[in-house]
Length: 208
Ligand SMILES: Nc1nc2c(ncn2[C@@H]2O[C@H](COP(=O)(O)OP(=O)(O)OP(=O)(O)O)[C@@H](O)[C@H]2O)c(=O)[nH]1
Ligand SMILES: [Mg+2]
Image (tube, rainbow, N blue to C red):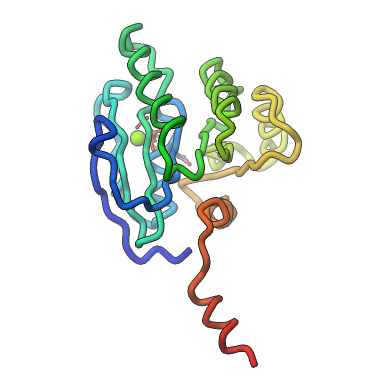
């Protein structure tokens, strides 16, 4: 997809603030600091559109970014931040569960996992939760640039095995530094939202 236009829309604190225009939504979940906002910025070639929260673990908002007139990226609040109370955890769970189970325009969830480390208990729980909901899912292993190339294969295997992923489940090794995995991820997003490249349509029509 060619990104011509991307804009921040809203930090929504509840369903009444979610956009009403029914554009497909691609949500990003993952631990605090795993690279959700950086991934959005890389996908849309913007240095700093997606905000990095000054108070990790505290903001409980869904941040909406509109890409062309094609989709929204929805940056979900990160989980697993140590300094969060039991009560905040419970609220987070409820908020996210409502969104993931009840949001009609949601077409794909990107679950981000730090490629450098074995997935945490929270990562595994999140993965199992999403599978239970039967949401379309791509697991994205982030920060690949922080690993030597010689270690990629080993770490990918650890991530997949720890999560218990089926062999052919969608998976992308990604770096917001180098752009590794970006095109692959765009293709997966395009098919999930049923995107048709207008340029390709034109080509088809011009074919004799
Ligand atoms: N080297 C490298 N650093 C990255 C990458 N992705 C993110 N980072 C860094 O990791 C830190 C956290 O990235 P964010 O994108 O803010 O993470 P987040 O998941 O949005 O965090 P929260 O909003 O707190 O949940 C920042 O310092 C980023 O620069 C990557 O692919 N490579
Ligand atoms: Mg963020």
